[in-house]
Image 1 (tube, one colour):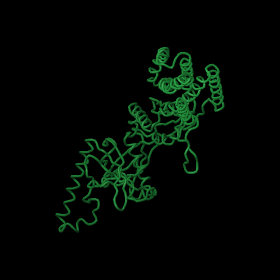
Image 2 (cartoon, rainbow, N blue to C red):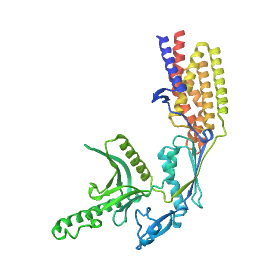
Image 3 (cartoon, rainbow, N blue to C red):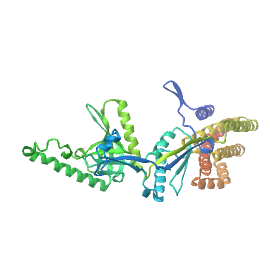
Image 4 (tube, rainbow, N blue to C red):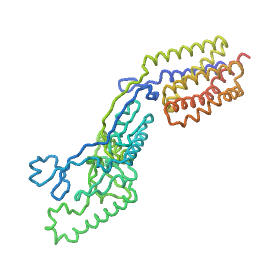
Length: 461
């Protein structure tokens, strides 16, 4: 029975070791992919993506009529046609001189930081120049880099303008939050961008709806008298509609009479469809706009002026050499345990290997960022665990041994907890690795190592 218990524990340790060291592979399309989460590396190991944003000095061309109103769809007009119609071209800066101030620079930095955090980018350094508002972002090279570039360079300006007067009816300040919804009918599904409005925005929508409903009644009461008079007067139509835009790009038209709740606006993204591909594209577009609206719009427009990858000073060859040295030290330690304590040493050596695998998995799934200091912390934990194992073999597997051990390393535990709250990547990495290592050391050895020694000694007795 005791042999069965020992074999069961050993098999569990071997399973943990196989997963920790080699992973779990499944077939994805025509390739095998490891389903175990990869490590998160700091910039000193993986290299740095350096991104420079500068407050834009560019201008945009606006074509206005004789009354100073902006002319829509004027891009196709030639210079001669513009002159004939009495239109005027104006070059307007995308950032006014009044907007270039310290408050807006700070606000832009905060918004970009918020976007990065919501995107899950937790390893970055962001700096800005207080004099000109330029921003430097340094982050690790990863699969998210294109998403990072999108979220930090998008202004995120959302507007709904009156289709007739071009007056801005709603903007980012009127929106409390944005979500994505859908409506399924027999002939297809429509994806919506749902905007929950602030109190002020809700009041605006209620007023617009009331005006639209009042205007809708007028043609019915004067239909006989004014049927001829109302012909061709689409601009004075009974329904007030709006045009939703995001960073100047048209999203869709908005019918205010169709809004069923004055506390929110629903805007259809794309057309109703039964195509999965089309619906996914519409949903992705709606999700992106909702994400940007929720993080507020940048008070300034930025240009991407720098985007380069800076290699780490640590080469793959140096990492391999370090791994070989570590494996050699671990192997020597295992041999010492086996020679000195024979079967008990062999069992604890197997347990120790399982601890390493479990520790590596813990680091991956607790999203610890590994820097050089974090790797040093791993070495420290492995040495402490080896010392604990030796204590268990020399003295006893009972709880008194654990109490004595953890009292001895109490200063390390206290410093580890304190350093976990330090907002500096090297110290934070060292502390977080140590924290999870010490916690795992207590749990793992009580459950695995102590039980192996206990069962083995019971077998011998």
